[in-house]
Each structure stands twice: as C-alpha cells, then as structure tokens.
Image (cartoon, rainbow, N blue to C red):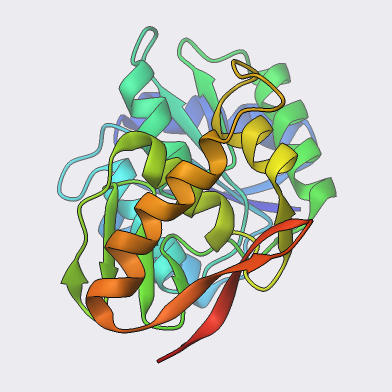
Amino acid sequence: MRVLIVEDELKMAKLVRRGLITQGLAADVAVRGEDALWMAGSTDYDAIVLDVRLPGIDGIETCRRLRDDGITSPVLMLTARGAVQDRVAGLDTGADDYVVKPIHLDELGARLRALVRRGPVERPTVLRVGDLTLDPATRRVARGGVDVELSAKEFALLEEFMRRPGQVLSRFHLLEHGWDGQYENRSNIVDVYVRYLREKIDRPFGVETLETVRGVGYRLRRSGTR
C-alpha cells in the first residue's frame, strides 16, 4: 500500500512518513499542492494524506484539482482543531475523510486502511445531467452555462435528483433527504418545491426534465423534452 503525504512542514511530514512506514506502508512526500498534482498523476497511490494549509494552492483547491484530473485515490485531509469550515469544504470538494491535528499515527494508519478497503470510486466534483450542472462546494447551479439562482431547500432537492438521474424518487424519499424528518407525512411540501424547481430550471429554458410519475413520485430525466 503506497501513500502520498502532502505536508509543507517537513518535520511533520517526516514524522507522518516514519509512522506509516513502521505500520508497513510505503510513503512519498510532497510539500506543495502543485507537486501533489503531478505526483498523483504519475503514480497510482492507494491513498493521499492532504494538509489543508499549504503554500501555493491550498489543500482544498488541490483536492478539487485532483478530482477534476480524474484521480480517484481516497483523500484523507489534515485539518486544525476547530476548523469546521475546512472540513466541510474538503469533503465537498472530494475528500473522503479527515483527521484533526495533532495527529495520532495509529489512528491515521487505521483510517487509511479503512479507506483503501472501500476502494476508489467515481466521485465527480460537479454533478452533470444533460446541460444542467450543480456544484455542491460553490452552491452554483447552471443550465447551458446560464446561472440559476436557487434557495437552500431548492438546491438540496435538486442535488438529490441529480445524484440519482433517471431514478423515480418517492415523495417520502425526498422528504427524508430534504427536510430532516421535520414534516408531516401528508404534507404537499415536495410538490410545492418541485413546482418551484420547474419554474427555475425547466420553463425558462423551454425544456421538461422534472417528470411526474403518477402515484409514485418524481424523476429527473437525463435529457429533457421541448
């Protein structure tokens, strides 16, 4: 198992590398995000340990570029204690897990082994269905390159559809994933928000992608009718 450690503090990088080697792992070190990009592109790493705070491009942007480049190796981010926004941003841009500094090397090794057991998966940073795009990190939605402004709830509902294109999603499923259980089962709130979405992502563009499946729920078509 070969791991890439991306850490600009050399003392910390050497400590982590030594700790992982003692656990039977092979480890390389990059001190900049730019270095990590070419190293990950030329070597098939089983996992990447990525510090958020890096000179040049930071860990968040490095993770985003790794995913954009098609690198699917699991990424474990190192963050400062209390840096919640860093953890949120890292996970949104394609990281798989995080460890808060100061690092416990045994835990780091265990987390890496758990990530590798899962295996690499396709995890696009930006969701695309036809000419509709949704970026969970920047909260940007566009159709055909034209930005679409959505409320937080509309965004959450559209993201659920775009993660399951072509699948029929029941009202109950959408309620559970969009309203955190705070709803009445007979509420028509899903129908209301689907109507809002249609008014923003379909009708202005002359397409119909959000389809009603009578008696079941709704489906986002991969290509809309005009």
